Length: 277
Image (tube, rainbow, N blue to C red; front, side):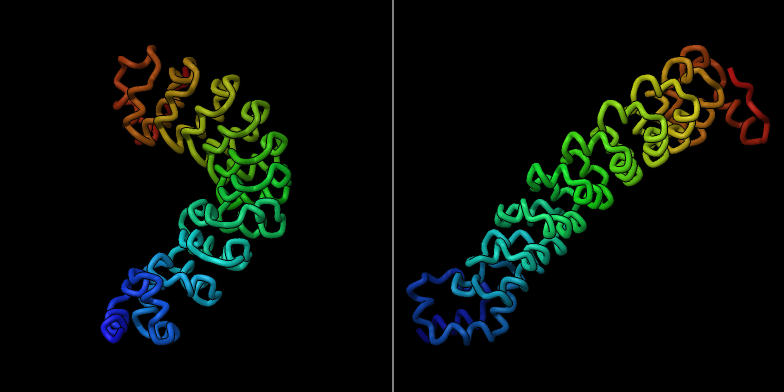
């Protein structure tokens, strides 16, 4: 017994590794709790903490602050404890990693889910169907991360305000909007200004819109590849794309592919206005 106590006092992993019968016989587990070895164990993760302490609120909170995914190791009702789960979410880079350990009863709790998606928008994937169709819940989610739109209900994906907030945060979120809104000019402009490559997500009818394509290639010249053929041969569009990146040369249309585009870029830089097609 004395040897066991010495091991536990010196090694953070020892109490978790010792058999339950041996640990139960240690002189007052509370002595271990007060030791530096216990503090180190908690920081390392609940896996290394004796099961007797996994139902202790103070211990659980400290553990999930250090390792949000440890929520899966807690005992008692802490997996449905809103404060504990929110603390885990607030200390987790990937919200889903923490939320997988939560009690699924929280998936339908509107007040809780509002707080959860404000921490990590993609936690919306765990929400009930009813909450994925809740405008306020979905709005908070896409404000945090635009791609949370993928988890929204169909009606929300066709909601102009929701989609505008999503693409303003992440232009590529346009991929998850309804067909109607992917072909909406206002939505498309917001998306390509944020992420030029979102041009590939807009409706075919807008890939020939000069203003939309210009905004896209100014943000990312490689977006030129998604413009229609006519605009890939438009000198103003070509120059805007090449100013952003020389890699856009690969996507120039056939009418100008063999011309000295580099010379045109230099002339444009010197202040000469290129003539449009």
